[in-house]
Image 1 (cartoon, rainbow, N blue to C red):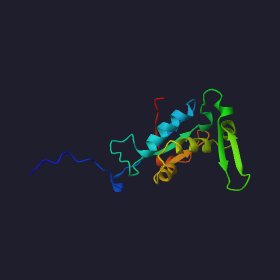
Image 2: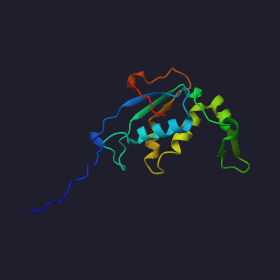
Image 3: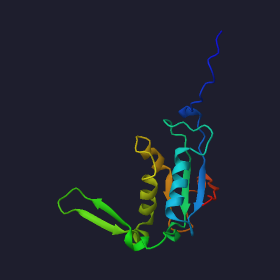
Image 4: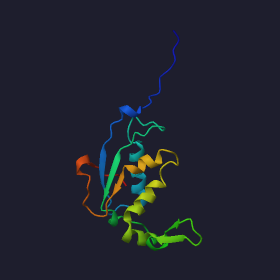
Amino acid sequence: MEWRGFRTFQAKPGTIHRKWYLIDARGKPLGRLASVIARILQGKHKPIYTPHVDCGDGVVVINAKDVVLTGKKWKKKTYIFYSGYPGGNYEYTAEYLRERRVEKLFYLAVKRMLPRNRLRKRFLKRLRVFPDANHTLQAQQPEPFEPNL
């Protein structure tokens, strides 16, 4: 019998155990926090990570309105949306989104750090963002997670 080498582990969708993590965004930079969240949603923090299988965990972000952007990014950073109609271009500053839709600010930051493939929608379904300390996911029993930023 000849030696065939080591077999690479491949996670199966039925054997994945999901957990939820609670992250407090107060005083943390948006981009660095978004990269940590993207890693957790993909499952790269687990030893069973498999690129083509959704083996990530869920993330609950609280105190999102207290996130930090460095420099003059609150006024200079713009987000552009297009409705699809002529003249339907909309441009919002980061400050505007923080005041009115802080969930969208986090959603876009994390979305743009995830791979552009079919799994991205599934990853983003497990991201929940709340502007203050109150959240509605007590049933999932999220574990506190302190990222090293």
